[in-house]
Image (cartoon, rainbow, N blue to C red):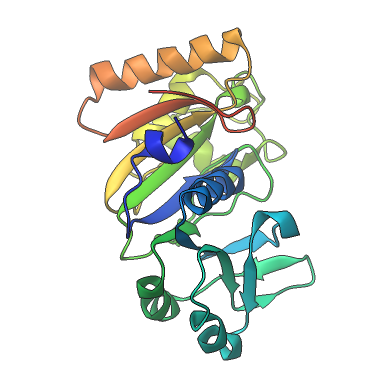
Length: 243
């Protein structure tokens, strides 16, 4: 089954992706699934994302002056929209009003709603994540390979806030309990979430990490059974998914 099937993607879904350790990869894979099934998908951000490789999309529309022109294109495929591209080759995202005017033209909308400064795990400032009000599914990404990494700003975006959420200290190693805390805390991964809450535990690239991800999933199901609508574990890179 494709990733979109495991997610339970339905026509007119608006998906916001948050967290760290695979957000863009997950969005691009979902977009390819939609295209394969003859859908029209809007791929965008409410923060910033790097301009995707050309093979990852069919149309790219940068700048509000271009929006109306591309909306007239009545072809299925992947449409990347942004307000501008900055000097880092990042697409600057869309405001809520702009999204309001766009989502109706597409079968699906995929939004990267969080930033992590290329770090594999993060905590959140007051203004983060930027989840669009019309979101029907919020997908939170956790990188299981952050286990045993040292808690410091080199590894953890907003490490000071991470320590507060997880009751940890700088210099400690990340444990399963820390990952659990970052998922379940009101100021954690699903802060500002709207619609269905779906956890994706990513990078289970070998049996060790697969077992650790399964342990994390079992703890959530046992102690917080009503917190999430769905938990997936797997490897986006290797296209392996487990419910």
